[in-house]
Image 1 (cartoon, rainbow, N blue to C red):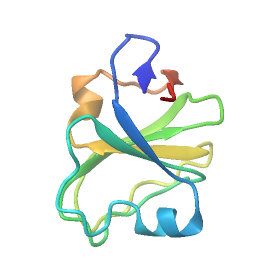
Image 2 (cartoon, rainbow, N blue to C red):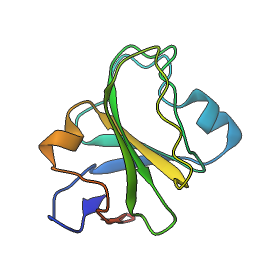
Image 3 (tube, rainbow, N blue to C red):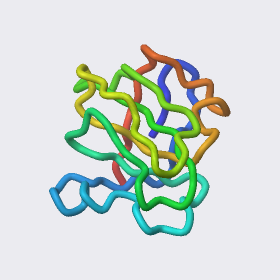
Image 4 (spheres, rainbow, N blue to C red):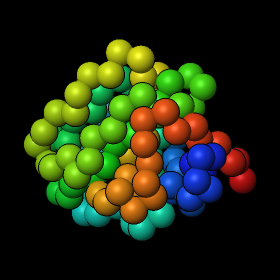
Length: 113
């Protein structure tokens, strides 16, 4: 997954959570999220971090893969904001938003292997 504005890689490995059970489980009960990995939750307008053991960054995107919201360093047992214009979210390791200079309005490209 690439940020088209600045060419930075957001995630080199992006798994899709596009069924009810995959969305329900999300990243719960995992010990960590490996560097370069992320979870694309479709559809989704908000997240929670209940039963998670580590903080995450959350990138909310619309149907055009444009960033419409950001939650940085969302700690375990918290709720993210509801983003009514979001169609899906990308969950990545904490610090990715800052490290990649991701901003609202950026557009992404998701490359399939």
